Amino acid sequence: MTTTFDYTEVLPLGPDDTDYRLLTTDGIRTVEAAGRRFLEVEPSVLTGLASAAVKDIQHLLRSSHLAQLRAIVDDPEASSNDRFVATDLLRNACVSAGGVLPMCQDTGTAIVIGKRTETVLTGGEDEQRLARGVFDAYQDLNLRYSQMAPLNFWEERNTGSNLPGQIELYSKAGTDPCYEFLFMAKGGGSANKTFLYQETKALLNPTRLAKFLEEKLRSLGTAACPPYHLAIVVGGTSAEHNLKVAKLASARYLDELPREGSASGHALRDVELEAQVLEMTRQFGIGAQFGGKYFCHDVRVIRLPRHGASLPVGVAVSCSADRQAKAKITPEGVFLEQLERDPAKYLPEVGDEQLSDDVVRIDLNRPMAEIREELTKLPVKTRVSLTGPLVVARDIAHAKIAERLDAGEPMPQYLKDHPVYYAGPAKTPEGYASGSFGPTTAGRMDSYVEQFQAAGGSLVMLAKGNRSSKVAASCQDNGGFYLGSIGGPAARLAQDCIRKVEVLEYPELGMEAVWRIEVEDFPAFVVVDDKGNDFFADSTKPTLQISFAR
Image 1: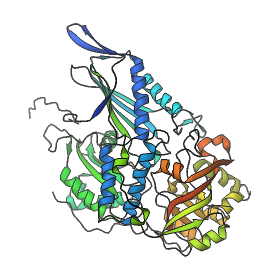
Image 2: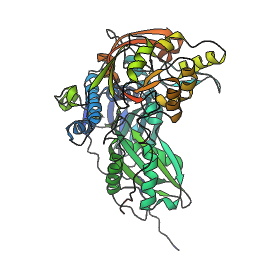
Image 3: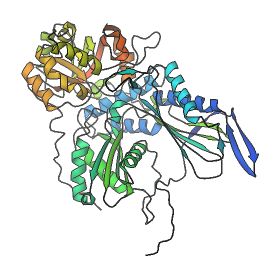
């Protein structure tokens, strides 16, 4: 069989209708050479653009995302918990937009994807210049350093700069000078909810695909702070290509893909299947973290070409800290996507009594036995408001305390006397009691719970997301509780709920130290009680009997 050459971009995008704002016209100029027009870009322009982009995405959101949060509040079918979470996230956006407290305490890995035509001249050190812009932003702003450098296979140390970032630079077809960018900040919670499944042709069946996605999407849980922007990618020339497309789709970067495929092998976006998957997620009952309809804001489903022997399936999410912005450098100037600077316009004028059921106030200044005696009266899903002291400890601190227990040392008294909050703060701005200080993913500490509770500690835990069955079993055996905090509103918690922060132990660990904090009216929900009841237990089990329409 004779085939003629037919080239197609795998990801052909339509016109860019992004609303940009002009940052500057300095540092760029056009030159003529060899009968062509080139754009010279001074290296400092790349540094300044990266720094400005990091600042914007740490504090501002797209207006489309904010409108989706407001739609939850206005939807009569939304649960009271859906509306409470959505309103708290809108309040958080208002605090963060002030430019002092970032929207999430996990200020993420900096990701920069750039594409330039051959008519853009920069001097050749683009990656280094962009990295310097990321460095400057993390030094100057109230962000958190999360990148760990391996000193050897077993030992590691925080880099103290949030570098290295993930910087990827590509060529772009065309002769008109243009340098396009996507800037992202990806926190650990949402990054950890990126999954690859190696499937076969048999999955390309409406009934089998529906069953597969119900199981896999339920397993995402709530640790990455829903409502999610969900991306599902089927196919790909390799596993890594599949996951890259899933990440871009979760950022709505591929929205202008064709709706139909062709024999040449380009990607397509299936908007009909997206609507069916979105409706499926609304039947899960998981909702916006604590039950309801809004597990997802929206869904993107991308179909890619594939090798006949492989069918990779990728799933990715963008969480409530929906941090990305496009940018471009053209002969007209340096431009950055216009994010919403006045999120207050989306905030409803409602009181807490209109958003959720009755709130039970818990005084944490009392002995642990009295706190547990009050919690045991409450059914799972009850909303509580916490006031008093919390101990803050996460991964590294838990590992160090476990080593002490293994060596025969006693459980630290502070974990016996106070509830433990899994979190790690961002920098504290001048004049504030705390930097952004939202919860981290509870599941990362699951392996410690049984040992700690048996030793008298961690009997009341506070974090975000669902837990494993062994945590519920340990709480039943030891009289413990797990309270779920709303994932996402780290800036609002810092401004409105955290009154005092001090280091208790391991100050050399930075944000991973053990802290003691004082909170006031800190919102949470009873997720696991001392009887072994788990709010999320049923929502993770597939129950729907559906098939997608072709």
